[in-house]
Image (tube, rainbow over all chains, first blue to last red; front, side):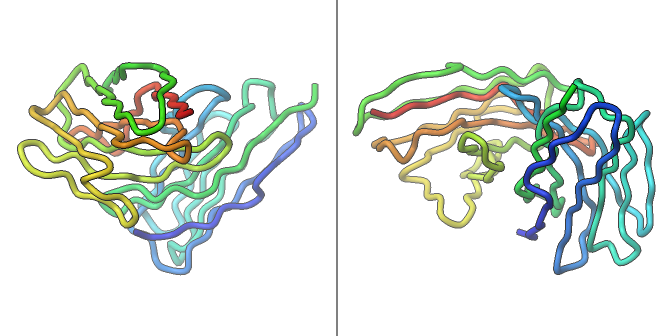
Length: 108
Length: 114
């Protein structure tokens, strides 16, 4: 399957600050999905990006798909304690290939 | 959306034994998948469970070690055979319905092999 590299592996954020996690592939992706896994929980779907240059927003979360469809990013503004967890990107090619994830902790 | 349940939620097993994990979906899904996730790690796809035919395994996973059944569109089992401590992990099943973009995941089965 397609491989995606995700950085950073860990993100320690002060409550109220913004952060971004990045997902990169060496090949063109058909589409990419993002999931969030809370500590002790299971992955939960957040979004799918399909089109080149696509930008989607969910409240404080902004997802982008690169023009070449080889990278994606998730930007969270005004981080809250509820944002704690691991965010995975996954290349979707009839099956999901997950990135390593970015584990987010929040300092109150 | 789909709600997925798994049994057991956790188990502690002895080396050399086998464990069968059950996955039940509350609605029909076209695709079902089995993943393995080590604590603090990403998800690794084990296989795609095909209804009425043999599962499709990913590189590094074989049917003798991880036999999978899917007798209908809402149920699947994964057996971890002849277990060793290296099989200790969380095993997750997921389903993808026709027309859905996303996969819905079960709560996982935490397996510890002594």
